[in-house]
Amino acid sequence: MDTPTFSSPYPSLDQLRRTADRLHGKVLETPVWRWQTGIVERALAPSTEVWLKLELFQRTGTFKLRGALNSIGAMDAGAMARGVVAASAGNHAIAVAYAAKVAGTHAKVCMPRSASPMRIAACEAEGAQVLLVDSVHEAFALALRLVEEERRTMIHPFDGPLTAEGTGTVGLELMRQVPNLDAVVVPVGGGGLCAGIAAAVKQINPDCLVFGIEPFGADAMYRSFRAGEPAKLDKVDTIADSLGAPYALPYSYGVCRRFVDEIVRVWDEELCRAMAHLYQDMKLVAEPAAAAATAALLGPLRSRLDGKRVALVVCGSNIDSQRFSEWVARGAAT
Image 1: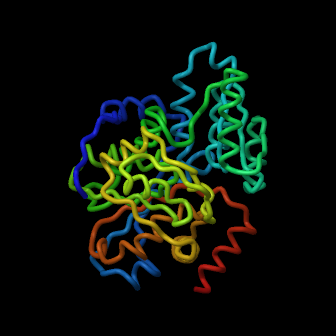
Image 2: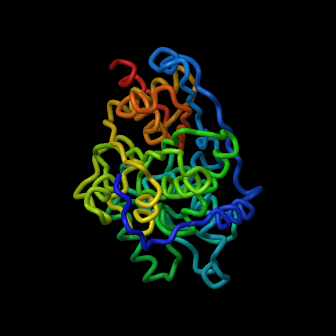
């Protein structure tokens, strides 16, 4: 990959460490576990080390809480009184609802009607007002309107320094837990998780490769890398709704472009197979987005990472039992 000229800022290691200190006790330090059985044992060289960063064990079920808490923690008293708003297919909405409750403010979350009923119920259980619209695009539009009309603070699902500082704490933990990694593989929706983790990883070990993984039906960051600027999708079509960002935005794109070695795409069928392997071998209930890194390791990145010391970020587990069973069965059958 050619090294472009950058003007975009990024979170420094000092900023990431200060963020980790602020979030201490509010988020869990999620564990890592080495995958040594099943498909990894059968399909990869014995020298391959596959480590799972189990962020699906985080409070609210995903990494999203880190950025949400960091963002709300930066608000002043007036903003806290007016409340927050978020647009999300579910995971970010749940995190914002929880973070708003513990911080003592009020959240409105804008979600597509296709969102999992379990995720909608989780938002309501945390005290958020859920506003349903027809698409992810409309959810973002409604959230921005509420910023204007009600002067609520937008807690963005993937863009901005506060989000990247929060997600970067995942990378800090991982690099301490598993030293001397050859590669880190991270799911990409809007790029907030990948930007933060990549910034941490590359500043700690510049030789460690960072791969971002997108589904073919929601590949805004892949297209952005090719275009040399943030790209927008005409439509989103993937089972990985948590990776269904309709566009890339300047900050996360800039940080990813600086630190991520490559964006790799996977098919929905590969996501289903990866979900099945994570369930059968590791007993993990991973939503499709959380299986993206595994899908890439077992698919397009297999030859490049075989024999390496690799970490896969397993980012979330907010999925209802019916959809999980359907997609795991689909993956096991292929």
